[in-house]
Length: 280
DNA sequence: GCCGAATGCCCAA
DNA sequence: TGGGCCTTCGGCG
Picture 1: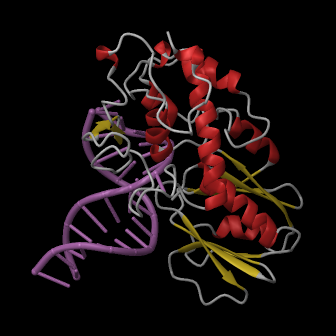
Picture 2 (picture 1 turned 90 degrees about the vertical axis):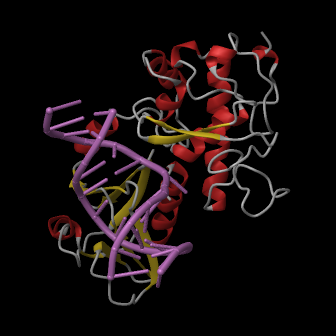
Picture 3 (picture 1 turned 30 degrees about the horizontal axis):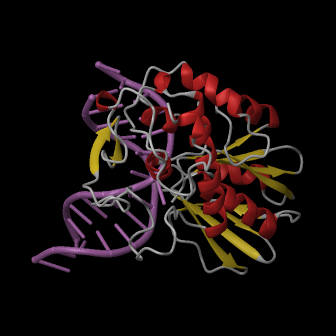
């Protein structure tokens, strides 16, 4: 379930559960045996999150960089934990809590300098207090793709995945195929604002829910994986956009060819209350 | 038991 | 642009 909110939630949880302790780190599966050997019995200082990436910072400066990819997951146990499944890539065992990592795309050791170099490739992380929208705006304007593709480009913005992309574009009435360069600054600011609020809510809830509780249990999103738009009940279009499913209600988000201007009503309280700058 | 899907992303052509 | 990576889970028989 890894979009940025999951990663930040894990950083908070793992800092609370494991930081300050010397951890027994093992790789039952064997594939990260070298990583485990470098940090086992060292003190974990903190866990940092940037976009969809985690960095476990150990005393002495070594980091363990984890990227969950599509399949990666952590499982949490009270120590002592049961024997690990054979697929467990890394087990971090503290006095109170043990966590198992499985299926991750990346689990590697790196230095502080390595982490810094790595992060240069990523755009600002919407969930960090020091995030600078200006940087994302500049990078966005250099993209020749549609806004839908650009939002998933982690070198533009870090932390947005397929669900939040669909939902944030929907509530702002923006079609995924609108050219990124045609997005107005006001539209960009509104999207940024929506994404920050959705992601923060996701960290709190430990799940993605962009529609309030007035709707049914299967209705936690406006358009993502919905057959019909929860706002206007029109058919939700689903299509392949660069290898990922895109979802849009083309009534609430008119395709760029059909709407020459950015004038659109906003679709829910996730969008900015102030829409005067988008009226023309 | 097998198949497909999943909130990601890299790399070869 | 298409396939591969990697794991779990639910649906289907």
